[in-house]
Image 1: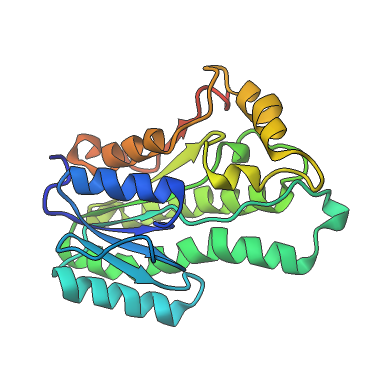
Image 2: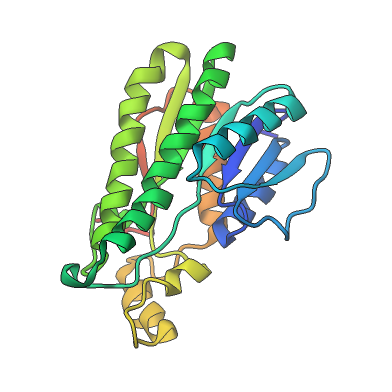
Length: 246
């Protein structure tokens, strides 16, 4: 049990990738605080604490972390999975409201949670943060301009924090998922296009290994990065993408 008795905060816990990660962390012996806007499908147990929270509201984020620390007595790490997609849209048609929403959820929320967890990790002299970015940050697709920018910000923030927090024994890494078989993948489809056709003819065919990435593939990589097996790994960007980034 690689995460035995450690306490991890997982955001985006309601989504496909989030649920798979919650389950894997519990299997590995962790206590999990599962954060999302809606956590109705997650049942509280002695090891699982679902918390409904708007991750773009700094006061609510602070309150959530205080509750987690009070409930479990410590916080060992943070995994930021929460994010939203961008339907393929030419730059001329992206509104400021579109841009602000994508940046708020994909970049500002990880900033707020990273900022909030840091004092807890510093106090114990160790800890780990893993942020989910996207392989599109390395190999962009047309029309995903705001989304790609937001995910690039996640990588830059993570590597800046890896340097800043290393002296405190805190590791910070990034996972870049490739096209993943979740509900979110269909949300990248251009307006009027078939979601299923897009998945098959564009996303699946872009993966050299020949299949979409499954939520469990991402969850397994997160277990590794949060475990002592990755004790010397920080500032890394791990592509879990079936070769899409090559």
